[in-house]
Image 1: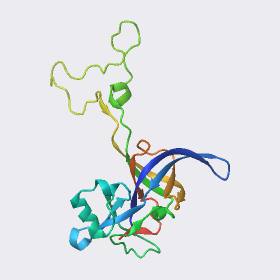
Image 2 (image 1 turned 180 degrees about the vertical axis):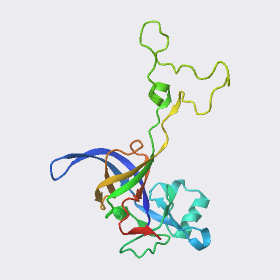
Image 3 (image 1 turned 90 degrees about the vertical axis):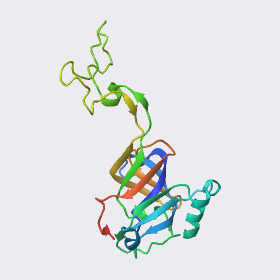
Image 4 (image 1 turned 90 degrees about the horizontal axis):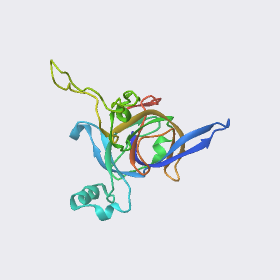
Length: 221
């Protein structure tokens, strides 16, 4: 079985559990994907499956090399591709081959998943918002309200030390959330509902993996 899936963040909503508690959830459109290439231990030194996210508009934008890559697998061009490890799960024969479809059903029995995405970009920010600095005095004439303050030494070594926290670009970082609880799996609409928020803006691409802590009956193949 493939360990993960390519998805798209739809947005957030809330569900009511049987005891009446409200659960905030993020809706992820997980797949559908197709296997575009298989990596084997004999040829490549590791075992993995390259998945492609199915998209009706991808065929118009695919170049000639990418069309040939998908023709080998017998599938139409996909919009986005990523490799995922192959894991052994009880009741699964493990026979994944090029051209096979992969849907959100792989998370049907999963209790927790890991979600990887790119956080929202916040542009160029100062040290208070970016690093949580306290700032200077708020009194009249202090001239040091939100400034970072001294950044070096007046004597030895008379330079700015490497790794100093300062203003700069904030956001658009790769963020991994581990052990996110799976609330619901909708196989008909290819939807995966997980508890809480996940990194990224609405419509952004996310990668969902089976959590290592949710490894009952699961192991590397």
